[in-house]
Image (cartoon, rainbow, N blue to C red; front, side):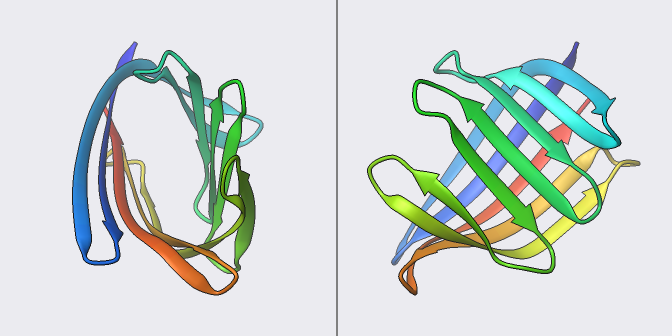
Length: 124
């Protein structure tokens, strides 16, 4: 069992929110990708799967949410209540020596930016 720490700075318009979360979970390699698996505060299973070029985050809920981030191209996701969203990855930096992932991205819909995110995921 490991400790997974997620720090997320979210900016929507002029408002910023800082979120700090810690969970017990697992770190392992599956099909050539590194995986962090944990249960969030809403008791939903979460899988974060990554390598040097891409990261996917799946929250297994009544309406599952899957976000896919890639260094080189725009990706899309569907979020219930909002519809289809574009995901633009600004930075994806994996550092296995320091047990961390830094991810900066923004979500937009129909070319309208919704929010900017600066996320750091670490494990120990």
